[in-house]
Image 1: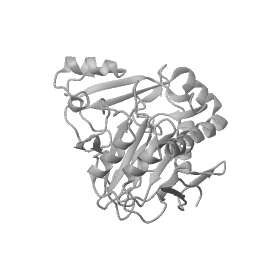
Image 2: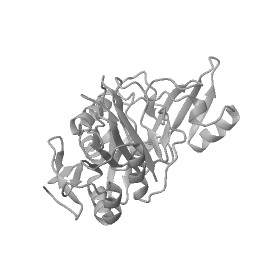
Image 3: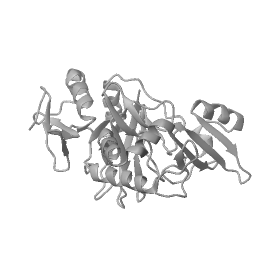
Length: 316
């Protein structure tokens, strides 16, 4: 037992990491066996929770009586934050109820690389909620990493690389078909931009800092950028590793500096290794809610071969 409010007790779980004497992420449970809703607990303890998420970057709520997506939607709404619409994102998702969507719908046996949600776009959510509706028997975790820790390690080992990212930023290229496909970034351009009209898609893409090039095979080439790659967060007074790591270790993947130069493979591989070394993989339990500060923490998905259903919500 580490800290508490009237309704919550901060508990320890084996998978947590300790940075500067503080456990990451925070894990909170009911202070006593209770049937009181998490929604009511949140409303009565907002100051405590706001401090906790600001200081830790992520909070896992465990052991509360959440049974279904409607309960989760009530939890999201109880914080009072404005909804962030999922426009332009590459992952296939489906609305479930209210502000709740499926998490990435790609087959569960596929890993999803570490990323900040929608980090490639001018606007991105401030916080993310995840809810475990069906817990996998093995695997399927949503690994999380403190982004400033990765930045600090990369700055120490590859200072010139970090300096180039800070100076130039990054450019990403991806190829998208018309309709969705079952891959982690397989959302088709029609659903990505919510239109069947190519002209409208171009206009909406431009607002997201995306340039579209229509190809003869029916696909579209999306060039995204420049995007920062790293970012200084005033509210935290820290620099963070702020990007999407998919394709960093593959020279054939189109992630590069904005001057057209490829990323140095040794630095890119070190970044991916550090993300793995610093990650926390908390096995999901039915009813868990994970709240993530999108400017402090990267997340991903571990593969699994058993039933798994994790739902999500994005807020500004």
